[in-house]
Length: 79
Image 1 (cartoon, rainbow, N blue to C red):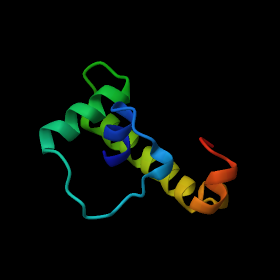
Image 2: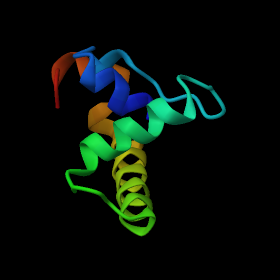
Image 3: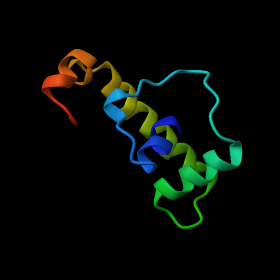
Image 4: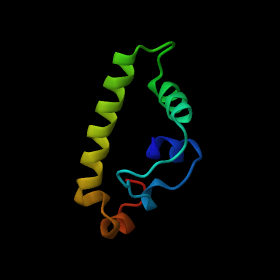
């Protein structure tokens, strides 16, 4: 949700670092955001769960990538 809400507001994600345990928005805001980005009309809980698990997996890979580190981010802006 932290990434998606910032992406929706067109914030620079290169400068953002995920913080576990940080509470942002309400449960309703989170669910609405997930449903919007899930790209399914009337998604089931299973579809939302699969979407969030896949997204989290991809974001973890990105956060751990040397190409997405703050140091390399200067050279690979937007990568």
